Length: 231
Ligand SMILES: C[S@@+](CC[C@H](N)C(=O)[O-])C[C@H]1O[C@@H](n2cnc3c(N)ncnc32)[C@H](O)[C@@H]1O
Image 1 (cartoon, helix red, strand yellow):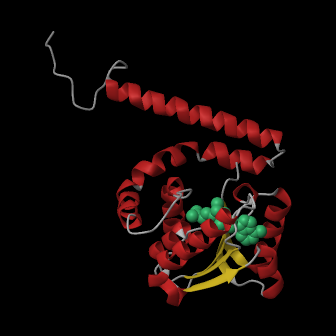
Image 2 (spheres, rainbow, N blue to C red):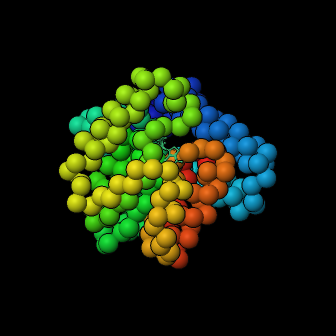
């Protein structure tokens, strides 16, 4: 019997690379189980479970597939003024959706409820170069940000200034509505208008329900609606 050298792609279970792959697989599986439990606790419809399970491998592979593009955006992000980043972990999934629905081109109308310092807004305008984006935000934060001190007012005016600064190079493709999403829906009574809606404003369930129903009326038939923090 000859002693064949092991090929570079052959790993035993004890190989560190193989061990890391197994570890990341088990951690993704653990997340999947806790997400499924959450869905069952909240009486999610069967097709939501189906999507969760049927896209498990795809979701696990997307960060690798879009690594180069995500890294490139990370570099661009360094030029922005940000105090928080709630968005970057979503980037591979958004890139997949942009690719799948061909949103890089064409006159795409986007509505974003909840913009903060404009990181997700910047990403939308950067990755969808022909899109027009409407941003709706109170620039007063959520309840947990409001403690009523003079300081919090100063902080929020800074957050809005950061938004204005971060988005200044895209001002010709941007509309800004300062106020609650309810005030926006009341003022702009349009239907069947947006191709893409991103809901990331207030996380109170009645506000989210309102945002979902009213934005759905504004969404074109066949349009795309994305919720942050669904789980
Ligand atoms: C999580 S942050 C948005 C983050 C942003 N999409 C990103 O990824 O960078 C939520 C934002 O929703 C805004 N907000 C909270 N309640 C709102 C409401 N009722 N109407 C509009 N905006 C609201 C807050 O001011 C805050 O800027």
